[in-house]
Length: 188
Image (cartoon, rainbow, N blue to C red):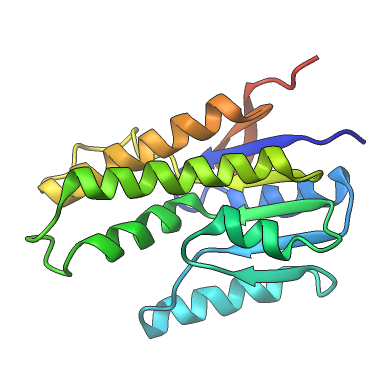
């Protein structure tokens, strides 16, 4: 099967990760699962553990919070399919690198530069590796406008990251209540 780049987007709890895990074996194997979450508190640690239990034992897991493209290039091994779950948390990780917890001290241009560089390096890595990629991200543009500056900046930069990925992707699916709705078909 030829190399494919599939982007899966949707709201929280829409079935994105589940669909990615169902799709991966159909694209080939072995699978490298790239997890971008950080366990900042006990509830998040439990979520991460639950995600781990749902993955097949044969899949390798790479836990990274930044420099994802570089880390994949270094640790791809024999993987033929790479799942990156998820861009939403990756963008959050970049925010955390460049701002304080209150959101008072933020340098929006610096954060944007960091997000664009991170996603650009990921796309470059996807183009360089002979493997299929499944990227999971949240669609945050369907809700209310965030009430604070930090929330609006995060939404805007995640949207920018998503647009960069969508342009590079062969296929894009929007998850709605567990149903994958094709948005961008495979190139023929």
